[in-house]
Amino acid sequence: MDFGEQLRKIRADRGLTQEQVASKLNVSRQAISNWENNKNLPDLEMVVEISMTFELSLDQLILGGENMNNMTEKLLKDGSETRRAKMNLISIIVGTALLCIGVACILIKANSVEYIDSAGFLHENFFLLPIGFFFMFSGIVTFTVTGIRNIVAKLKSRKMQ
Picture: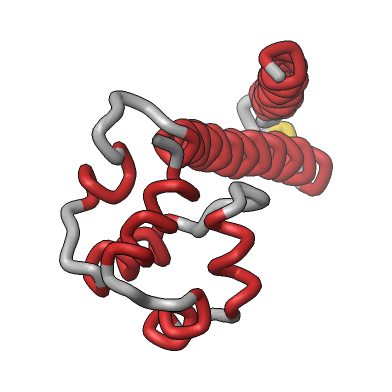
């Protein structure tokens, strides 16, 4: 039994109209109708609210006696998308930090003073150039890998649909 049928059955068993259920959940009657007709599905917070309102466990509400239905698939998909979004955010932050460190190293090198001391030794912080370029390259690689992972994930999701 899919989520819409499960919600309709729960509502009918309790002798409630869509309007009454909507007022209990603080949503529109159209939202209840859309959920029951599987036009769309409620978000996770609303699923918990429905469970508490009708005093059902989440297993009873979501699974409805079967191993998997459309709500279960939606929750699994939302979870994987959330993880992917978090990883993308972390990758962007790391890539930006690497680029900023690289640019800072190059700017420090460009604005530093080189001099020869009285003993004839040249004092120069040349080492900042390769370090700066390394950090910039690492940042660009991070952005590139993140972009390729996103493209591959989108292609896989389109292929599965």
